[in-house]
Image 1 (cartoon, helix red, strand yellow):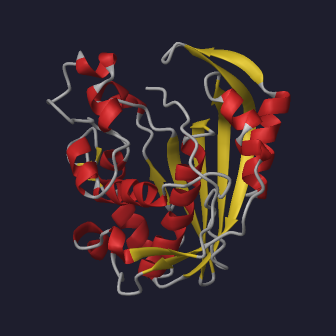
Image 2: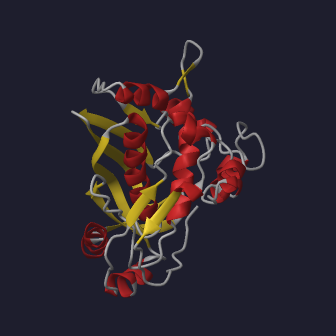
Length: 283
């Protein structure tokens, strides 16, 4: 919470107003934010100065791991975050690559599980790194990237959180995650939860200990219609202690994550928070 609140205050105090063409709104913006999470000691980074919808964040991550490309699939596991980008984005609705209602195109997990090779076939980045890490291998290229400029035109949204690099030191696994753009009031806690859970899950299924997760954000911003709620409400609330994340220990493999895992396999212990804040969402 301290890191999160310090970033929010930094944007309010030092941010520069930037016009965003996609949304037609101004953003109060800073460049270069760095956060880190102690996954090994289970200091789960959930926001406590407002209600955090952690289940949807983990469900979205699970959809990425499974390579989902359809908003209906995300809804089926408890995540509604792709409904608007799949169905209410005018540019995507008029894109000839869109296959129909709820189609997202070749975004996020699709790239992570089936990156198209120019000579034919696909690369499963996630399986490669899970296989390596399960065998104690770190070739300094244990990278999961969703950022494929050659196929941006084939998806509804460029990835914001775009690359995850795993590093194995002995039997301790670390994660460095890179994000090009972040809606701090709405999106950041989703991203924090996902970075934490991604390291926790990959460590668990590869038989390694979890270390720290490092979260690097290039462009961190607050939209103009969010600023008053952030400055006058959320930043004036006193945070509570961090909760703990409980993951079903029966999850042992990538196949488990692909097949039977649901939100019932994740629990939060000791979460106390202030009431929700209805921040506007920009498509």
